[in-house]
Image 1 (cartoon, one colour):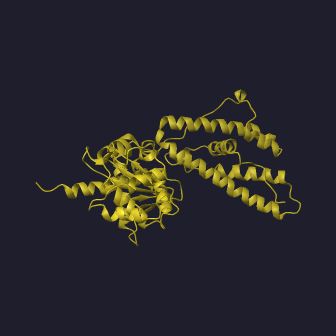
Image 2 (cartoon, helix red, strand yellow):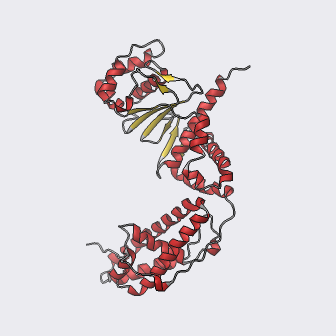
Image 3 (cartoon, one colour):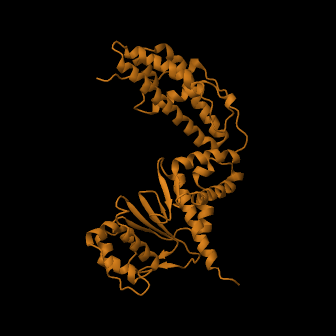
Length: 371
């Protein structure tokens, strides 16, 4: 029978891709995730080194190459890592009881330094151990206080089954029947980013990933929903001092409060109904709200700039014009992924604008004029 060494090595790379994919799913916008650069997986703040084994009994002991090679590489690249807040050794091995790594993450940087300098190196780790012993003590402790070990991590098979295809971003976006197919597509997407790279640097831009995620998600979704036309009893709607109604009062636009309350409650009930019908719409609905907020902010800047250039501009009057123009424009917003665009009612984007006003303390209908 042929050796399995090549297969297990390839499995280690697949494991790395899965960890990188989780990082892409969870990263904030404007983050760039690197593979095989600044560690196995890096996001500019954390460098994560993966050590995968199919051996369930593998242990991390004092002279284990997995630790020392990782640590030595960090020492060599101190300048590159100066702005990183953490280094993580992510290993499927278990820390051996009685080893220098026992209780590692609870130790002080001084304790860690004492332990690693006490190790008598063998031929395998001699080069890396020498780097630690010759490293300036201040620099050494600066690395060690950021260095953690995550042992007994799930192996590739378990990681795929229990973490990747169960990840909330995937399970809430993709119908259950298509989850594994979509996860495999995403893993292929990670590989493609290296294949198509002009400089052979393996990296994924979170902003691009988010767009591509949504574009390709369409291939795994069932037919778009028809938007539910929910009505509310106006006689039962009570203004309980909502922030968005107070905002209208500030600009002397009490005449708009009745419609605003109606739109607000109908839109909120719509959102609840859509999520009950299809949980996979959660991300689409959040993106839709974010686009409304961006449109609000952009238009407000335009109006405030006009007000600042006007010698006699009435800020309340201009605020009312801002309100009318925004609500008129936003009522035409029909691009809600997963919902038939021609069924979306105009009250929904207007109501979600009031929701943004209600939830975001910095959002206001009142224009401000520079002093």
